Image 1 (cartoon, rainbow, N blue to C red):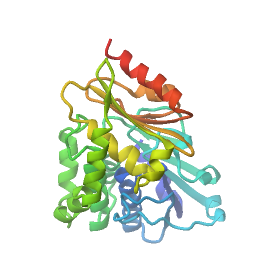
Image 2: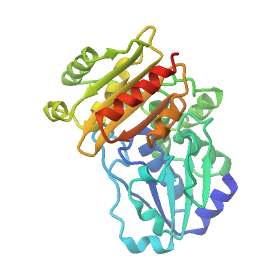
Image 3: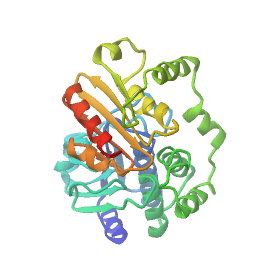
Length: 310
């Protein structure tokens, strides 16, 4: 499949790279990293990146996307990264492209592109792109290596999650042959200002635990409006405060917003992906997400997580 992907990239002089909305470090890292790899290898090509913005990862190269006219797509290849379902793709103009290609490491939910390369054995989409580049002879530079390494670090939980394996470290080692200031990178990723520390403390005190030992946090729309943080910081950023509680195997963060309730599901023990899929979401076996219609539906999801403990 890597050979087919490389042939498509070689074929098109104009390429637009997409990723999922509300981007994390892996989405941005794989997007900008692949852009740099293609431009480094094929300098005559035009390669664009598109998608919505982010505060949390605004420090990353590639966080500022390009303005791409509609007419570009007519003769372009659209590449979709780090996305398991069509509804999560940021900018649906990929549908107008002459050809489509997807790289993803989430559990397969649906066919999206002409060529879908989906492999859940990779800890990150950045890991998948790194392997593709190495096997395909694409040319790295410092910018590509840094972006891809950043995505590997964030999606592997600093190489803690059980998706991390020997290949993860081998690929990370290849990237570290380039100029990556890990001290500066980790400071951007993990050094919190005092207000963020207070926010984490506040959310730690919001943790509730069911009689089946499932931890959960609920943030109502009214509460969200009083917090000096964006939806991503509260939803994706605060789910981790429940991750290291002894005796807790599964946990979920519910954040009520104008567009629905954002659900971040996690587990150390169980495959919670079918629950996320049941409610229109997706992701990984032990880390998935969904957007649902109400807090009432959230309580049904919580009961499904409880049922795993029976």
